[in-house]
Image (cartoon, rainbow, N blue to C red):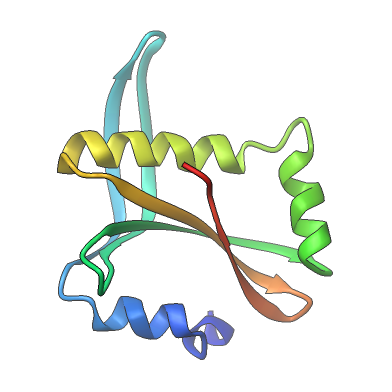
Length: 115
């Protein structure tokens, strides 16, 4: 996490007046109730809400991230999209979302998710 503290996203999150960590949620679905915990949810300087989901996978580069996200058994994108739906229902606003890989070639990589 120390590496992340030097990243601009960390500074943006710290400066936010509206920031939540480890946000629990429960959302009804067709198959029951989906429960989870959003790593971070904060209001950006532009006034939009953003979900940040941290991942500690050790990956070599951005290509390795893309490959990881395309693996058939990887659910990172689906996980965060579920968080996004829950947060939008709760807040009544559009929410941005990103994955933050904390060790991609010993760098922090922010991977925005398409809406």
